[in-house]
Amino acid sequence: MLAPPPIEFAVRDGCHLAYQVAGAGAHEIVFVSGANSLTQAWQEATNSRGLRRMASFARIVTYDQRGMGYSDPVEQSAVPNMDDLVADLEAIIEAAGLTNPIVFGAHNGGAVAAAYAATHRVAQLILINTWARLSQAEDYPIGFDDYVLDRLEDRYRREWGLGRISNMYAQPRSDQAIDRMELAATSRNQAVVLFQMNRTYDIRHLLPAINVPTLVLHMEDNVSVPPEFGNYVASAIPRARFVLLPGSDQFFLRNESGRVIDQVELFITGCLTPYSDQMVTTMLFTDIVDSTPMAAALGNAEWSRLIDEHNDRMQELIKRFGGHEVKSTGDGFLAAFNDPAGAIRCALAACGSMEDLDFRLRAGVHVGEVSRMGKSDLSGVAVHLAQRLCGRASDGQVLVSAAVVEACTDEAFEFTDQGNAELKGIPGESRIYAVQAVTSASP
Image (tube, rainbow, N blue to C red; front, side, top):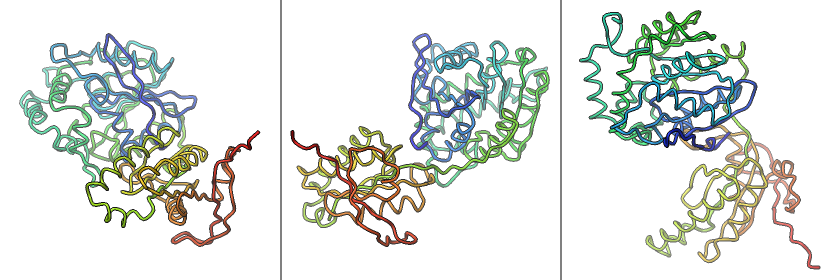
């Protein structure tokens, strides 16, 4: 799975809730992450790793809580209560066609998941780094006093969008632009409203009514929401199992998804299955021939105008033929496709659609195993092979590997053997083929 799952919408009382479905299998999981945009998480390589892992052994449904990501914002005059959030989850489950889901809740989504499990049919309940109530009370001494919560609310008001809030909840990574990720997840105003909502609910009275197998996980060094909060939840749910895990992140997807999803899979299936974040895909590299001297001759303004038009056309072609744009190389593109036929069609169309710009394109296509790298890039020898094929092609030519010829069953293409060649950085010799569309004979 390279591209994030398509975004769909459930509608409840006029509120649009964005959700995504991935994976397949006998088990169905709905992941309730609360104040965390999962449509954004799917687009980020590090955060999506745990989601892809779950999708390897179950059908998983994720969604943006109202106020987050692509879901509708929260109206300040009608801030949702816990009943509203449970009804939203019910709408997601119905829209996704789940009948007996495993409900997995994290952060404030854990309270929503638990409240749902107390009043609806579920197969299992899994909670991580969650709480039944945040604020202190006479019968709840583990809660935070109002001074602490007021200061935290003020931090949301002053600092959301700077990356500091997210880095408080999870150890920072050098490969993530956290400030932009925060602003993409929700606005500063919405973040404040959501925190105010989270500090007011109390689901303690619902926990004893939960009567399904329940696993409560918590990071043992979590200082944002200490383990006492998770232990309270587990103690109040009949026969729930409480497990402390090494780590300190409140938002586990950034750094701790491996050990967390291990526990989730063991609880659901009883075993751990081998998992690799590598995948086999079809890669297309395109390149503008002699782009450097052309740019120098045209000047910055005209070159920029033409390259913008080229990029718009390439992005439209990649989408039209079922591909996923991985990155622009400045004078070309790397795109990934689920099948070689789509990549070849895109390559041939691209080579024939830039003549009015006086651009001469070439392309290379290869099928192989790749790994995710950073936010949106791919890595592996297979990526380099596709790039080398592109670099070897002549004007208007599309070169493909033997793996493409073997995998492509579409009879609309004609492959011409170009013999073996040594490609820089690729072990051994590679068999190369030129490809063109089969033209029908005139009657």
